[in-house]
Length: 326
Figure (spheres, helix red, strand yellow):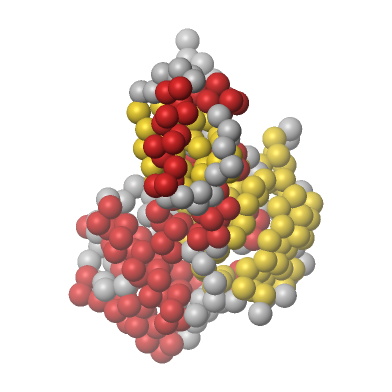
């Protein structure tokens, strides 16, 4: 059954097209990832689907409900954990949960029962009476997820849920998200620019770059699309290697900067032959390595840039837009 249907959704801010005619479907109970750098359009998609922003054009439905025609029903059926913290630090965990439940007009008996259940789920029961300002970053994230589930949403939006957390806390939070999906059957839409996060958590991933979906499939299928094996050669002759080297077992190339990545079948069988070919043709080789494709390679394959380069580019564009101080 389809939980989310998006059809040519577009959002413009003046001359900037943040989301450009995006379409996809999400199945009920699926963890669906929007993977891309900051500024790619991930959060804008979440904002439109959660009725926080109005689309410029296109349509979207959650559980068959039009996001523009029945916003109240949409808001009752979703939970959202924002990229920026929205907890009241001067309240306890229990008080934050209780306040949220009152906003949704949840009866007191149900509110108390659900709050206790959810605080146990995220292992905060023993700290329920502590002020949120005494919580670590990971504890706050877990509380925000619990709060987002209090009114029993059918769709949960997690916008960069582990941003700024240390690796150990990130892994712990991933376990909570996976357990939540298994035990509650909730459809989860996750935005992230962490490759490992998307690879571990998501049933399917949409790679979004500059407001456009470049590819959409399971993590494994996306990696298979890139090729069986990847040989990365760092060389001042990277451009020439990509243009001149040919062999039946070479699937393709992509290069940027001073390196070329060669997609080939059975790298272990052909690596020596490849090195001989490059030596014979006089290319200067600084280093060479073999690996299986990752989601970073998928992003590079579909966009021609690494996600780290996109992050830097987004930062440069943001700095260019900021007023100068004199």
